[in-house]
Image (cartoon, rainbow, N blue to C red):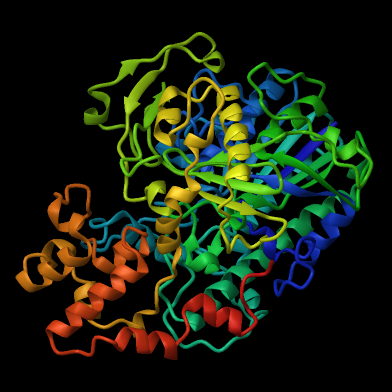
Length: 620
């Protein structure tokens, strides 16, 4: 028995032909894959983003309720390690740079063998010294490093994605006659930046004379429609390159008759917003379906089922138990996922009950649940978004260790069942500018509103979803602090007094409004001036205080020194209405027309409105 996991990062379900037949993205090998495997219709993410999702793939259980991005913990059971200990050779080939960072350093060493290929995103790979470029903001340094890295990948053959697939194929060729191995070929693409070579870009011709733009920020869209369309085409080109990589794996399996005894799982960790809902990227906004309703394909020789679809609710936590049982191992008691063979073996058209509900989210953000029809996004009960607690024995963040200040007040926590009797460190976190309370608690009916454009206010449905959420939180041993932060009862049945959608709906609607394009904003220079400097001018300070008094009346300790009114609005810390009102009043101070923004907004559509009008908006 052999198994291959081909994993992508930030792969959008709604651009792939098996899920969206009229997509503009050219991906014929995904269509071919759907003919050789079972297409999962309701596969959801769980813990996000990158490394939390990979922790789920190793452990088969949610982790975002207890800690943020971080390594595997000493008490975690790793499926690749369990397979290796049982005599199954496990191999990882990847170009995912986060494995090299503090917050990912314990994952690849769970495999029997592993290899990595450098250069993705801002991977600190090739050293080209330029005075001052190592200083400044992290994102700026990453973008500079990415420019350097690309010069070392001048052809497709030298692209890290290509080299990773080459390595995977080399492992397959070397071991095609061997038994008992599991290969994980893990591609960072189509994660941003959307770096491809010209032949892939040429497949998506379009007129564009704006700035280079294949790396959108994690914020609301403020770019003009043409620039958004360009980014979508850059993403499409990278997906087409990923499709070619998929085709290379399928070709090898075909040529060597591997379908009889080799499992194939093709998945991703999450999606990526390309203007949908007025947003770029992920994490800074609610976890809409474009981000969490994922593409997933499974070929399992145990069932032989292929060319069909299954609509059972499934998740990333199901991958570990599927691999373990495929090789004859029983998942441990901490595993929350289920063997996907149960779903695949069910007759086509018959829904096999795997999970009554699926949790998903990120640490300190919304805690979300779906039953396959409704999606409930539970925000914090109040603006403090607290308490936020970390439970860990591996105190590292994404790219750093916990600071001594963070560690100074840690306390030993009582063991959870999944920590195997071990007490962890309990550390107090703080709310950030990405606060779910701002966006409010949201409820959607996917049957009537698959694009999640019209949040429901329905007390009866919300109460049912609140009770499902509470039950799943208890089954997952969520700490008491999560119940307190979310305003849910630690014990007993939730009641009408625990509902939040109606109370938070007005704020949710205001924050959800897209921003106007920059060209339509008056007083743009002042909107792009750091707030700490803007507030030193008395008249400007009075304008800001009139519309956002809290910004003036509280100390700006947690506000980055470079933060501007525009960047705050792009992060949903200000609403579109507040930004426009401030802009008009600031413009009026200098004699500009106060109505300029509204006139420009009527004359020029926002980015995602322009795409929809042009017929190139998000595929549903």
